[in-house]
Image (cartoon, rainbow, N blue to C red; front, side, top):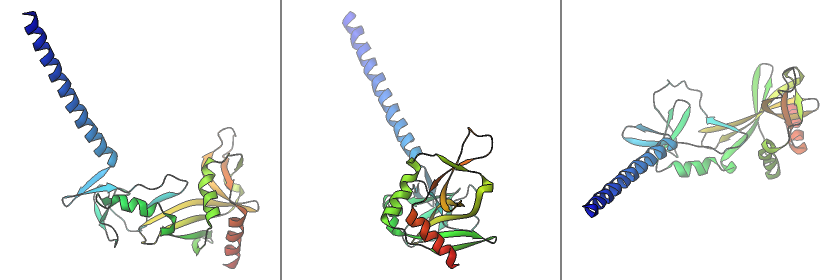
Length: 216
């Protein structure tokens, strides 16, 4: 009798383990699907287009109005892509290639956009490899300098637009004192007034921006 009970217990234990493994596998699959952030349109699966994690803010380069909670197909020569609630989704068999494309700065055109006389003036600019490396390292630099909104002489931005015109990316700049600075959008909580941390652009890039501004 004792051996029979042990055998039944063993079979029951194995059954519980198998059920637990199945539940775990199903859970992982669901989490993976959720992590992929997918949408379904006309029987096809589209995966969220993820961008580089850097100081630039990336988004869809379009001015058309699209209704919320409705999937909208986007005309693009390179990818099968749709727009949904502020994000772009690329068909799953193209999404890895698309991510690689938009992660490469060689696939973008660069501009300085000046705020001048209540208008925006966009001017092409060439940014060197060293300047790019500096820009991408600014987020890791010490934040020691601050300014207030009243200190800003002029606003501008560095903008890059993908060569297929689908994606744009931007960082905000401020002319403060005699230089251009990256506006970190991070406030100094240790001061009573609204002081924002800023980081000065490299001298070579500062010079280019002032020259472009003077030529307008």
